[in-house]
Length: 357
Image (cartoon, rainbow, N blue to C red):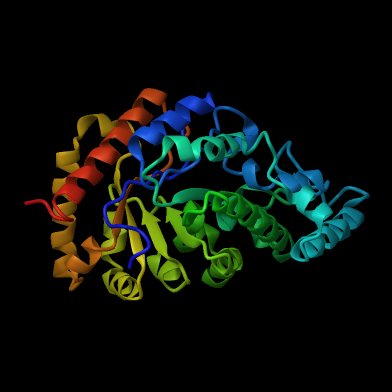
């Protein structure tokens, strides 16, 4: 039996609210089967895309929040670095003090705690729960070294980031598992797009894939379902080669990038993979469309994929619906409209068993 039913509605994660109950209410109305806790970047800087998952590096004295740079030019860098790896090793051994050091910071994860406290009462139809973490490439390109270069290019700094993000993902997954429901965790890594950008020719597929794999494997060992979300025209073959359960992409804007990878997509689906079809635009364009319009667009996309020799029926059995990206920096009114389109589209396809007659 499949772990998630086709045509379920799932959010990417971020919402523009500053009040946690209001964000929770929106999710409860639109994603009843697979709710997600909400990242609220407009509520606090600690819930921003980069800062939310690197708090332990700040606590360790390795990362400066001003300028988002590693503090390698400070006198205590070597000591702090050694101490961090000691705590990391202790975490691997389930040491209580190390667990406390890496614990999810209250300011950064206040909405997660609210979500868990209220989940049972507000989501009686929940079949699973979804969380999310920021991806290593996207974080590593925005955090800098002491010379202003992207940290991902530096193998030692990249290792720090990957280990920190991994631990935060593991701790989040363990919290979600207390609800005794299946857990899905998305790794949001839109900067995978830059692997094909000549301006970033120092980035390699191997480094990006290895960084993702180091995060994926511990989560899979916890029996967590893992996906990667990229809201850009990435080389999807990189993700299809990883042990992922789901790949999430912006199907509204970047469908052509997936069409070009139809054979890799087919192989991924045959191995049991799922597609999160991000068909609801997360822009002002959402005001100009309806669920019926989006369904028509999907049917056109299916025709294109069928012409590329993809088994469209296989795709229909393994698809869920999402917005094309997060909504954290939008206006609340627009975010509500996007989530309304999401649930209407999911209900439309669920009602018709994955097709539009």
